[in-house]
Image 1 (cartoon, rainbow, N blue to C red):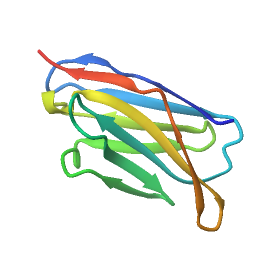
Image 2 (image 1 turned 90 degrees about the vertical axis):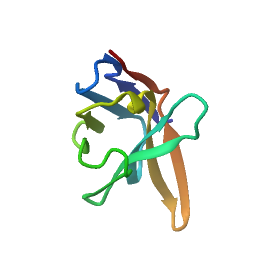
Image 3 (image 1 turned 120 degrees about the horizontal axis):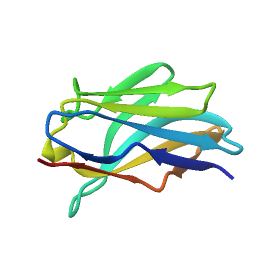
Image 4 (image 1 turned 45 degrees about the vertical axis):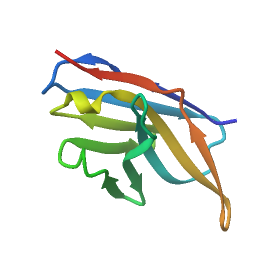
Length: 119
Protein backbone atom coordinates (compact mmCIF):
# COMPACT_ATOMS: atom_id res chain seq x y z
CA UNK A 1 0.00 0.00 0.00
CA UNK A 2 1.42 3.35 -1.07
CA UNK A 3 0.52 6.53 0.80
CA UNK A 4 1.22 10.08 -0.31
CA UNK A 5 0.93 12.86 2.27
CA UNK A 6 1.04 16.46 1.08
CA UNK A 7 1.80 19.51 3.17
CA UNK A 8 2.73 23.14 2.77
CA UNK A 9 -0.45 24.66 1.39
CA UNK A 10 -2.08 27.75 2.81
CA UNK A 11 -3.03 31.35 2.23
CA UNK A 12 -0.47 33.67 0.63
CA UNK A 13 -0.57 37.14 -0.86
CA UNK A 14 0.00 37.71 -4.57
CA UNK A 15 3.71 37.70 -5.32
CA UNK A 16 4.43 35.41 -2.39
CA UNK A 17 5.91 31.92 -2.24
CA UNK A 18 5.00 28.52 -0.90
CA UNK A 19 6.70 25.15 -0.94
CA UNK A 20 4.60 22.03 -1.15
CA UNK A 21 5.92 18.67 0.00
CA UNK A 22 4.71 15.18 -0.82
CA UNK A 23 6.06 12.34 1.31
CA UNK A 24 5.61 8.83 -0.03
CA UNK A 25 5.57 5.68 2.09
CA UNK A 26 4.90 2.01 1.54
CA UNK A 27 5.91 -0.39 -1.22
CA UNK A 28 6.50 2.26 -3.85
CA UNK A 29 8.22 0.15 -6.46
CA UNK A 30 9.62 1.50 -9.72
CA UNK A 31 8.69 5.19 -9.93
CA UNK A 32 8.36 6.34 -13.53
CA UNK A 33 7.36 9.92 -12.79
CA UNK A 34 6.44 12.20 -9.91
CA UNK A 35 3.92 14.92 -10.64
CA UNK A 36 1.95 17.79 -9.23
CA UNK A 37 -1.56 18.52 -10.46
CA UNK A 38 -4.03 21.17 -9.44
CA UNK A 39 -7.76 21.66 -9.68
CA UNK A 40 -9.52 24.99 -9.29
CA UNK A 41 -13.27 25.21 -8.60
CA UNK A 42 -15.25 24.49 -11.75
CA UNK A 43 -12.16 23.54 -13.74
CA UNK A 44 -10.56 20.30 -14.82
CA UNK A 45 -7.53 18.90 -13.03
CA UNK A 46 -4.39 20.04 -14.83
CA UNK A 47 -0.76 18.95 -14.75
CA UNK A 48 1.41 21.60 -13.14
CA UNK A 49 4.83 19.97 -13.07
CA UNK A 50 6.47 16.60 -13.62
CA UNK A 51 9.85 15.06 -12.94
CA UNK A 52 11.08 11.84 -14.54
CA UNK A 53 14.53 10.43 -15.20
CA UNK A 54 16.09 13.70 -14.07
CA UNK A 55 14.00 15.73 -16.53
CA UNK A 56 11.40 18.29 -15.53
CA UNK A 57 8.37 19.57 -17.36
CA UNK A 58 5.97 22.40 -16.53
CA UNK A 59 2.60 23.70 -17.53
CA UNK A 60 2.74 26.90 -19.56
CA UNK A 61 1.07 28.96 -16.86
CA UNK A 62 3.68 28.13 -14.20
CA UNK A 63 6.89 27.79 -16.20
CA UNK A 64 9.55 30.09 -14.80
CA UNK A 65 7.74 30.48 -11.47
CA UNK A 66 7.44 26.91 -10.14
CA UNK A 67 10.17 24.34 -9.59
CA UNK A 68 9.67 20.64 -8.99
CA UNK A 69 12.34 18.58 -7.27
CA UNK A 70 12.70 15.16 -5.70
CA UNK A 71 14.66 13.80 -2.76
CA UNK A 72 14.85 10.09 -3.48
CA UNK A 73 16.48 9.31 -0.12
CA UNK A 74 13.48 10.79 1.68
CA UNK A 75 10.91 9.62 -0.92
CA UNK A 76 9.69 13.20 -1.06
CA UNK A 77 8.73 15.44 -3.95
CA UNK A 78 8.63 19.21 -3.64
CA UNK A 79 6.99 22.03 -5.53
CA UNK A 80 8.51 25.44 -4.95
CA UNK A 81 6.03 28.09 -6.04
CA UNK A 82 7.20 31.68 -6.46
CA UNK A 83 5.52 34.84 -7.73
CA UNK A 84 2.14 33.36 -6.93
CA UNK A 85 -0.91 34.80 -8.62
CA UNK A 86 -4.61 34.61 -7.72
CA UNK A 87 -5.03 32.29 -10.72
CA UNK A 88 -2.84 29.75 -8.92
CA UNK A 89 -5.55 29.24 -6.31
CA UNK A 90 -6.50 25.56 -6.38
CA UNK A 91 -6.24 22.26 -4.59
CA UNK A 92 -2.83 20.79 -5.40
CA UNK A 93 -2.42 17.03 -5.69
CA UNK A 94 0.71 14.94 -5.65
CA UNK A 95 0.82 11.96 -8.00
CA UNK A 96 3.37 9.24 -8.60
CA UNK A 97 3.26 6.75 -11.42
CA UNK A 98 4.96 3.41 -10.99
CA UNK A 99 5.62 0.67 -13.49
CA UNK A 100 4.19 -2.69 -12.50
CA UNK A 101 5.54 -4.40 -15.62
CA UNK A 102 6.12 -3.43 -19.23
CA UNK A 103 3.19 -1.29 -20.36
CA UNK A 104 1.36 -1.55 -17.04
CA UNK A 105 1.36 1.37 -14.62
CA UNK A 106 -0.18 2.30 -11.27
CA UNK A 107 -1.08 5.84 -10.23
CA UNK A 108 -1.12 6.97 -6.63
CA UNK A 109 -2.61 10.22 -5.38
CA UNK A 110 -2.33 12.34 -2.29
CA UNK A 111 -5.32 13.83 -0.51
CA UNK A 112 -4.69 17.33 -1.85
CA UNK A 113 -3.62 20.56 -0.20
CA UNK A 114 -5.36 23.90 -0.64
CA UNK A 115 -3.40 26.86 -1.97
CA UNK A 116 -5.14 30.22 -1.85
CA UNK A 117 -3.55 33.34 -3.31
CA UNK A 118 -5.38 36.45 -2.18
CA UNK A 119 -4.75 39.86 -0.72
